[in-house]
Amino acid sequence: MIGISKSFPGVQALSNVSFDLHKGEVHALLGENGAGKSTLTKILSGVYTRDSGEIIFKGKQVSFSTPRQAQLAGITTIYQELNQIPQLSVAENIFLGNEQERGFLIDWKTMREEATRLLARLHLKVDPRTPVSQLGVGQQQMVEVARALHHKSDIIIMDEPTSALSIQEIDDLFEIIRQLKASGVAIIYISHHLEESFQIGDRITVLRDGHLVTTRPTSEMTLETLISAMVGRSLSEQFPKEEVQRGAEVLRVEGLSQGDKLHDISFSVHAGEMLGIAGLVGAGRTELVRAIFGADPITAGKFYVDGREIRISSPRDAIRHGIALLTEDRKQQGLLLQMSVRENISLSVLGRLTRGLFTNRQVESDLAGKYIRELSIRTPSQLQQVINLSGGNQQKVILGKWISTAPRVLIFDEPTRGIDVGAKAEIYKLMNQLAKQGVAIIVVSSEMPEILGMSDRIMVICEGYVTGFLSHAEATQEKVMELATAHRGVEEQRNNHNTRDNQHAASSGTA
Ligand SMILES: Nc1ncnc2c1ncn2[C@@H]1O[C@H](COP(=O)(O)OP(=O)(O)OP(=O)(O)O)[C@@H](O)[C@H]1O
Ligand SMILES: [Mg+2]
Image (cartoon, rainbow, N blue to C red; front, side):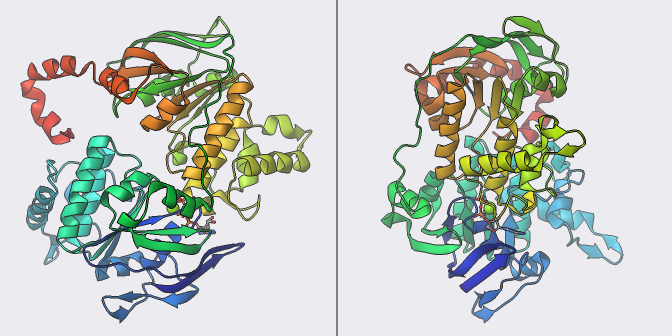
């Protein structure tokens, strides 16, 4: 790609960016939220058309006007938000839009055989007839890879592929990336987990504000030089944890259970305290915070706010008692994608802003301005539609929206997923500020350094049971992992007694 430029109304997303990719190479494309990474790859894959510049693919000048054209030519993108049809089977998804036909009939037999062959190549032990809705996110991603293989892609673009994967699934993905490399596929790899680029990247390209900063072999870069290339300055501290005086108990949960997912969970969190919840994927962390927020029904348990028992049977109840839940899932966050940044931020406090029948525009815009500044939301104006912001900046809008409701208890489920290093540090600072103001904070995170760095106390859960609490001082990665796997033995015993059920377990398990 030579001298690529692209502007959107009010934004110069890319200015004269050149990028090259070799056969059998993993090229990491990095930069802060809004730097232009997704835009560059979308120009390559026919989603956007460039304003200027050239694309040379296998020696020929090309220009794809749809993603389908690009895919047929050998360029496939695997997005974080998967574009599969959940009701259809694995095989059907692999062949989507490209069914094998024999006369007028779809040739299911050939399709299934080809699917089985592709899945075997990826070491994915699932029956091609399984609906993809029954697979975990990691396996769904593998199905996308199978689709890319089926199309004999020369280039596979992975835009934040690991953000929803477990450690095991990331290992599996890396193994597959190595295989793809070995067979000559070129991969563009976008991720905010910078250490991943060092693990599998051959070269790194950094973009900043739509400009090319550098392209270099991974071996010539360190984490420090990479971060300063990305943010244009060096970051003094990644986890600026501040000591905050712990206040009175704000929320107490007693004996919370939910079917066979959560078992007798009790804990409390105080004003100014940050409680981290750690555990492996599937341990029940998200189920737990959703239950506290009233998003899912519980089978037993009591909640107390300021020592008084309260009833939470819907998110409405939770919000009324000052409990806010910020989840990783942007689509379910109530972000109104077609509406502006300003409207989204002020939406949840609209009651407070409404005088008579009219929203007080000045107050609304001051509020939005404040959060755009504090969270460094990159947007050309308050009036930009949220759908046009980059992924990480959408996440920051959600954050602004919840913080503006002045909650007593703020629960974060994976708060920094998809957010760049600089903005992460800003979010941690903001958590500190909120803690100082007496907000009780609960953080669920799969990022161990984040949990260890920011929590005053860590509650570890495993298979729906609390297996221990660790203070900030005593917590180490090893101790957390030990507690996070403490119940494994129990589960394995249970499975061994259940061999008849194993067929399903084996086909849906992630090993
Ligand atoms: N369809 C669009 N309309 C208007 N602006 C857009 C559109 N797509 C992207 N932009 C803007 O272009 C810039 C680059 O966005 P892009 O999505 O490429 O960033 P990114 O590097 O992928 O960021 P992230 O890490 O947050 O995903 C941003 O300012 C974004 O708001
Ligand atoms: Mg992006």
